[in-house]
Amino acid sequence: MPVCEKFVVRIEANRPTATLEGMTPSDATRWLREYAAAWERGDVALHLYTPDATYRSHPFREPHVGHGGIRAYGAGATSTQSDVSVRVGDALVDGNAVVAEWWTVMVDEGSAVTLPGVLLLELDGERCVSLREYWAIADGRHEPHAEWGRFERGDEGRRHAEAWVEEYGRAWRAGDADAAAATYSPDVVFRSHPFREATRGRAAVRSYTERAFASETDRTVWLGRPFAAGASAAVEYWATFTEDGTPKTLAGCVLMSFDRSGAVRASRDYWHEADGTYSPPAFADRLATG
Image (tube, rainbow, N blue to C red; front, side, top):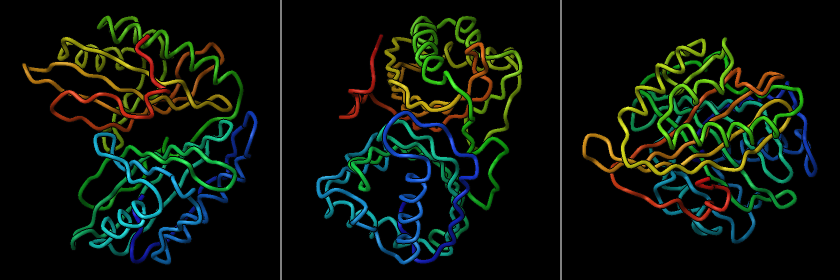
């Protein structure tokens, strides 16, 4: 999230999630509050980052490295922004990793825009070692959708997410829409993009997936090791394929909650697509082709 001239912050973390070891959801919320308060002052809050921290604002761009790089990015990104209002959702805490969504409404270059996204943080104590984000943008002012910002309490999220990575990854690589849809519950709430309407039910997921798989040839798919807590997880993905004769790369992050059987009961995505074939970047140690 870029720093801006003026904004209002609302931390929506009233549904704390379970954690494994390391920080608590309260610790994560404290980091986000400090980050947000500094943003409000027009400060990039360099004390929140280690001297060699990396900040990747887009999966297909080089990261901003160290305090100098982060400072320069913040100054450039916010130079056209004003009247920014930010909401931050639940913190999913997995050891020293934190996943949290944001929903921002602001004026950029004189026009109102809405910018939702997801942050993936790796922390060393109270300072960030790496930050990367996936986001979407739309003209005008839009309210968050009903599922936004929520991670569910419960258990078995890691086990279910690891099984999902194996099963869905196998289905995606094979272009098997039936097998992919089988990983979702019969009444799943599925949102493929933050500005698209949610679809409900496994049949709707299958229809969407079948169309997506049918448009891809020569695909290579990577799915990440899950960030997991409670009954929820976040999984990054990276895929290269050919669509209508054009090589493309898709990179994103899916946020999921699972029912007791391990089926996905809620799913929402943030992603970026570009023409050309891009190799997964440095954080690919969390990705595997299976």
